[in-house]
Image (cartoon, rainbow, N blue to C red):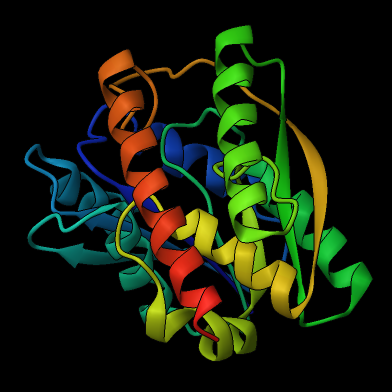
Length: 237
């Protein structure tokens, strides 16, 4: 089974679109569960997810409720811990990459047939400023961690449940650094395969990580702090 985690924080305007796009993208007769995590939203995202789950019994939609927002990573981890699939995935609720990309990545993952491999997106059609920001962060991360890591925040990400239990679950950060930690562990204990995905504008709502200058500065500071923290841990091993 494939378990797909979709963390939702104040995504009320996007919930119906998310559900529609996922239900259209799920392959026929697929053994898939879609876990929509309400990550402590202050709008009515949770109620809308409940309605979507009730109104779509033919699809394996599930709601995981996090009552208080404790970070982007915390919401994803709550979904991963509730998942029952042998393969796990997560993607963002902002719809800047298509839900169908999850299933394209899953087909690639299955074709490789290696539980230590992580498959992730590589974003195309991005703004120059976004490219500069991402490249700068990946250069810093790669130098400090002594391994080449690209497109840290690109979606989707797909990996085995065994890999999650062995290398991610116990020490994963609960903020935006979760993506970096996952990629670092994948480089250390396996390999990473990328697929191209089209990167689009957000339909509704505000980007939670790196959308505006203010959120981008916050993301940079948090990521840099975590890079140095992770570097210290690596150096002590």
